[in-house]
Image (cartoon, rainbow, N blue to C red; front, side, top):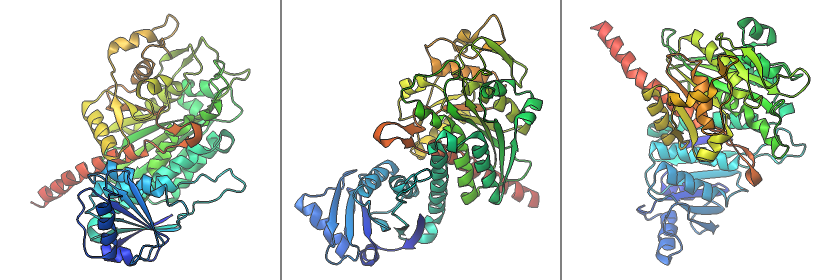
Length: 492
């Protein structure tokens, strides 16, 4: 889908030739003397439309407007959240449109503009990769009307970059396990290296064994599919700038291993690599936006299968850190994959480490599908991620990391067990991971409830690409003034 930014006022939008015109109307929007404003005023006067968030009014070939279909969508107070609500409601009535003009009857804020573009993409997304007669996305072109292109350009470019990243994450999250094997996921990572500033290295079983990643290898040993460990690098700043490391759980299919899952809804375990998909999506977005920051992405990918070689409950393995782990439940495999990746992350001397994983059903029970779970050992990092999630409409919620929660991970047969009891399962999983990050600023995002939807709307959400990208762009913006200040001090 092609997005285009154009300088158009209300009269220009009314005369724009397109299949559909989607007009966002705040409750307090002032109206002019053009045809479009006339229709808005008339709809308000008649009581058919009041601009409240999510309310819509469809018009067909209204006089004085070139578009075949016009939808007025109430955007409430004009905030990013109500604008997203308005766009999703409006797009629900415009499923056949091929060329859309999107405009606002009030001033755009940068946050609202980003939210509107993301919502258009979200509402029109169609998965086609494994369908023989798939009907592709109908919407081909979206013209976004603004007062001044120059002032809106930065927010527009960020939004378009985010769309590319979210849709890349959705693509890989939605693919079934036989079309998203560890090798294919690694190939997706390698494909990103075609973009300037991005490089990729992929390690296989032999290289991972040399590194001593015994926990990662234990999960993989029951599968015919070989594991893959992808190392992505985005270099947008000086080499001296410490990177942020993103670590994605990439279980391409999770049967639970010997601790096998029940059959019902097991097909959804193809989504167990959505942490890895989010890392892929972030790098796809970075390729478009190209901020001044350094980022490393680590994707540890394998299947969790129950054949005769599979790891057994009670087995003890040695992680890359040297710590031994008693595997009491083979269905708690994500933390075993992540712990070795977290140890590997240390070699980059990162400013911060963020791991992303569909880790626990307990987090779904706690937070449902609205907010991702956030755990962190660093107050500044936690605050930045919480703020990024709110601004990106991709929210998270911080959960505790009290040391008392780790008591359940004690065992007589190894340094640590991979599970504790049922109570506080999301927290004890995070406490397990915390053992492998030392004193580095670290955060863990449990996206088990937010990475995909079930039921009739089954599919990947692309979350938390928006949150992560907002965080990274915030770090780049914070670093930029410091770099300028240093440059000026040298001149002085």
